Image 1 (spheres, rainbow, N blue to C red):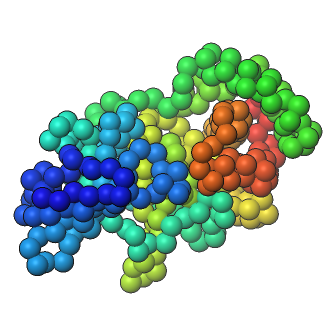
Image 2 (image 1 turned 90 degrees about the horizontal axis):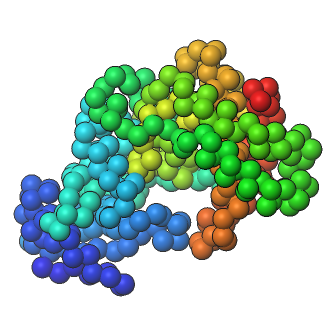
Length: 329
C-alpha cells in the first residue's frame, strides 16, 4: 500500500480501510491535499483508489479531528439519506481505523464552482434556493433534526462580544459604511441580543448555516446544471431566514437585489412572516461580518478578499437598506 502527498502521509486512509468503506477492493491509494489556495477549513484530500489495472476511483476525503467534521458525519450518515438533499454522493461517513472522523464524497472536480466574490446570475441564485427547499421544509420533529444544535449563540454573550468588536472598529467603519448603516451598528450595540433571541425563538428548520456561493458547485446535466451544496459541517436547527436572506444578499448585486430579490423570495412560498426574520438575519449577518473583520488578518489571499468584500462591495449594505432591516430594531 502506498499513501503519498507532497507534505504529509494520510495514514488512516489505507487500502484496507478504503476496501471496507467502499465495498470494493483497493490495492493502492494516492492522496493529494486540495483547497489550500481557497482557505478550506480542515484537511481536504483528493483520493485516488487503485484496483489492479482498472481506472482509479477518485474521491474527495475530509478528515478530522474537527467538531464541524463530526457534525458533517452525522449529516451524511443520518440525515442526507432521508431527504432529497442537494449534496454530493457520500461513499462513507464515520470513523477511520484509528477513530478519526472521515467523510468520503464523490469528486465533483468537473463541476463549475460558485464564486462568492463574483456573485451569481439570477438563474443560478434561483436554482440554489429551489434545491434547498426540501431541506428547509423537512419536519423539525424528525429525531435526527431534533438532535442537531440550535442556531446561534447565547444572546447576552453575543451582545457583549459585538459591543466590544464595534467599539474597536467604530472610527474605521464610520467612513466605510455610510451614515445609515453606521447608525445600525450603533443601535445593535444595545439590541443584537434581542435580535438573536427573536431568531432563536422563530420556528426551526434544518439549516445549512453557511450557505454561500463558495459552498456551491454547479454540475452539468442533460437538462442544464444542477447545484450541489457542500460543507455541511455547520448544519443546525434554526430559522429558514438565516440561510435565505444572507445568501440572497451575497449572491446578487445591489441593483439585482432591488429588482429580483422579492420575486425570488416569493417563489419559495415561505410566507410573509419571514420578512421580519429576514431583517433580523441580515442584521445578525452584518454583526458576524463586523466580528470577522475584527479578527487578526487572514492568512489566505482569498479569505482576505472575501473579508474585504463582505462590506466593501455594497451587496450586504444594499440588502440591509433594501429590506429596511433597521425596522425591527
